[in-house]
Image 1 (cartoon, rainbow, N blue to C red):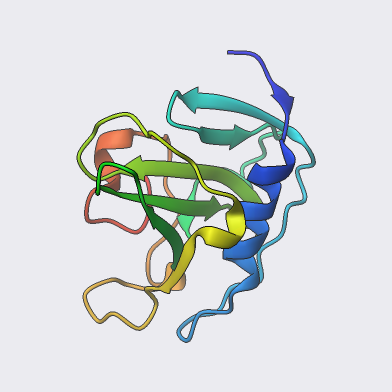
Image 2: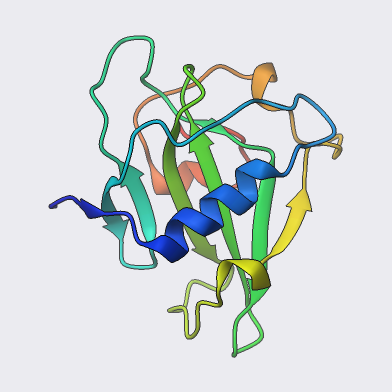
Length: 145
């Protein structure tokens, strides 16, 4: 997979999500890695290019998500992950029914959801970062393992 520049709509969506301060365990997260990303799944899931160090490995779930309802009525979520140095490492796009995304709205149309106050989901500091990325492990967890 080759790297490309982060598009403006992708940057704005990430910034919209991380600019919202969650009620519980508000991490300070930023886009330090710059503009170089690769699309690791065709739904728009992006991984940032980064020099891997032992302290920057792993992906921690940011407790705020964005969501919209696609034209077929299915929910689509955008999740942001970051590393132990508070740098965004991945933007994950998930459609609940597993079908292709029909329409991706502009960032300002995504609904922001603060999941940090849910008792059944630990905050980001409650669980350590993990390696490597596996898509199947996203269901029901706060970190990718």
